[in-house]
Length: 346
Ligand SMILES: NC(=O)c1ccc[n+]([C@@H]2O[C@H](COP(=O)([O-])OP(=O)(O)OC[C@H]3O[C@@H](n4cnc5c(N)ncnc54)[C@H](OP(=O)(O)O)[C@@H]3O)[C@@H](O)[C@H]2O)c1
Image (cartoon, rainbow, N blue to C red):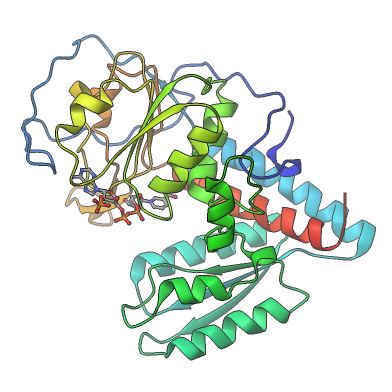
């Protein structure tokens, strides 16, 4: 299989796997609560077929594993050839439980791929200067090839100022204004592309889902997911619409989408009736919701009412096990690419 590892930015134009097997053995998320009001205040009026689910499940977990395995091989080759081990530094400020979990998972993924990880943990009441000092230290550290400032930062800090301070050559999250600006410019060449949207596009490629000329709709316009996802889809020649919290009648727009990407964090907002039959649905949303029947008392919910969507869409990412694992895999891809570039290793 051709690998994304060797390609820049969005993703491979090389051979993709054809995974058109049903379900792919991935586990299914819980069904959505029926007849509940949606986050946008609209009721659930379904006009979908009652036949058994037919959507192909896009197995992000399996794809991410293949990517991580390829990275591990490349990391070993680099170490053996030039004695360099790629390094990723993470700066975490405060005790946000979800952020701490993300950072733990990133460290674990680095370790299993053979990438060195560095970490600075700062208390919630740290000053912006302290964070900037950590960024600057990692900018100058030759063992560090990628720097990630875990977002969100405490509200007393200027996020843009801090992201601006990350060396653009080590900006493996792709959030530096120059990288985002280049992503937005026609013909622009960002050094790195934000990992979550990059993972979404990679999944589409790996499942042979054509993007060119398609009508794509992105729900959400955040700097880290919605906006770059829309830009990436446009770069792949889709015709893109963006929906946000002030959009009127969003379901009228989503029903036109051949490819629907949702990144709002509003569980079950996208009902089956919002989806064009045969559309491909990428659910980025990941929200912790209480569930007394779950062993840990909670479960992860996506933006999309999975049970309904499965009956209408042609392919769909589950939550969990869809976009999430791809985000981390793309972070490793970007870190390896950065190390290779810095050391001119082919
Ligand atoms: N799987 C992963 O790897 C991964 C990575 C990152 C994020 N996520 C998840 O993705 C979700 C979005 O993350 P984010 O950082 O982009 O969140 P965010 O910064 O809160 O942005 C949410 C976006 O959704 C829009 N929105 C909220 N409610 C809406 C509604 N009812 N109708 C239409 N649009 C609505 C907001 O519109 P306005 O701009 O008008 O406020 C905003 O643009 C979260 O669940 C997050 O946990 C997952």
